[in-house]
Image 1 (cartoon, rainbow, N blue to C red):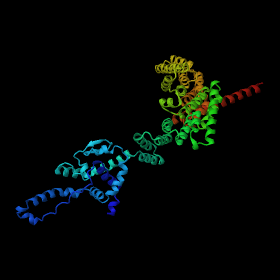
Image 2: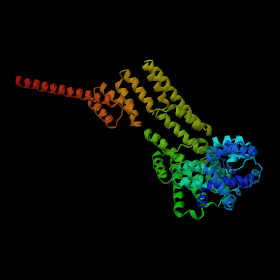
Image 3: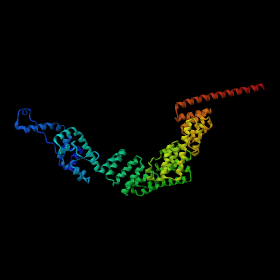
Image 4: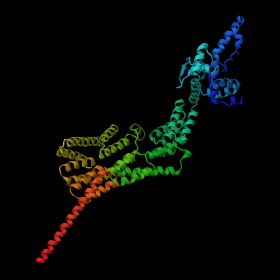
Length: 543
């Protein structure tokens, strides 16, 4: 009996819960088979023992079924008989969690499926496994129990676990907390969602979910969950404090200060000072932007990002714009790539349509400058949906014009119409004079036309804007070779090998050729100097 008492809670809950729901009494074990009659007695005709023979025949049919039943099934019945009081006590804690349990009791011939819905009992014998015979015939029961008993037992255990979880949202929350502590944030969020579905009025579930979202750097979604928690409980200090920290990272210093004031004992002076300092920095950025002081804007935006606003779209946009206006396109593109990538609908909901449109507008321009024309157009169109100001409409029109010029120029270049292609690229540069891609394309056309000096000028201009523009560097080295500027070509090839730009084998061969040509050139110069000296000596002697 001690071993039976130590059986897992799953089996105890299984029998107790079904008994509580269906009100069929205790699970009763199947009667023990009648002892066999010896072969000696069976061999003799016994007309008076006809009923005994019939019962023995039935018991023989049942014998292999009862022997093949798992120990778990029989122990379930024994446990329910021996520890009926303890099972009822444990099951009362589960049953009391559901106010509508009496509705389930009426479903005496139903069973809970894996997805939590009620289905009619089938002929697989789910109920019979727990000791309920029902109205099914004996022969059917024997067939189905012998084939499905293992599957049904496992399914029953899963169902019991699902029932407990669905009935108690606090259990789900605790399980989510364990996943959160172990760094399994996605699993934690799934469990918090289940708890919220059962009890959407508990602020703690939303707050815990926001913490998991924050760990996944899904800041906007974390803000939404925190706001839900605060709406349910305005004096929930943990949620107020977390929301203030989130707003600080998003560059919303005023909102951060507002929620710090409602955070009670969670906030200290350092938090308030940090938010106030960020507020002053953002104000300085806005002032520098209004007067187009891009050097100051670059400096102040960098300070703001390092002071806690590490995911602020507005700050990233101002810094990228400053770099763009200072013709440091490569750095601007890096800043945009490092910046937040929030969904437009969520960003608009939390930080507003104006700031979201500004960030998208700068992002579209940077994309265009580095040759991502399609992305630039789509991003600008997205910004125009939020803000139909003249500035954004003009930027969208300009991006489309530059992209169109590039496409037409490429088509002409493929047809070997280099003069027309060069003119088309020039037309695009009139709308965007500092587009490195158009400068490179025009340089390629000029080299094809033998205009090596002009091609070199375009390559230099493109590399000033984007120092790591590999194609432009290769084209510039080609111009040096065509102009027989061997020293400059060697320097260019060595730099490309050092920075691992382009095809290494091709660059090495070009470097060797350039060194050979430089050596020949120097030898010829030496010969010319020697001949010049000899001629001068002859003139001196003759005189």
